[in-house]
Length: 142
Image (tube, rainbow, N blue to C red; front, side, top):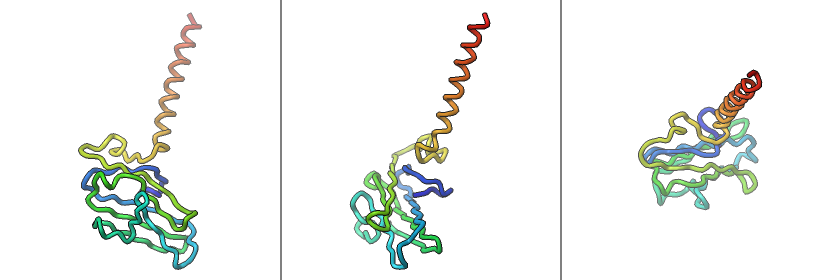
């Protein structure tokens, strides 16, 4: 699963009423008749007509395939694990959160996974260590 910039994601956050858009890139397709399946939990979504507002668009490309899942008018019942699979042994999952009201800061900045927040944590650690070193050095210079 990737975001609009091609970065691998583990989580996506949407506001109630928005459209969920998930993108799955498959690098090797087993054959021309291979079918990419989307699931929400254990429920197959590709042919689900009971909820309505669900569509899947899959493009077979020379290097593999790109499949997009769209779910209109997101609600709390749409939160959970979404899985894209091309076979029982080849799958990936993203966790979708549906929020009521305001977007959290992470969503406003486009952060969608914990790995994207690591540079901030490392920067904060460097600042703390530099401060500690400065205070330590000052205590010996007296």
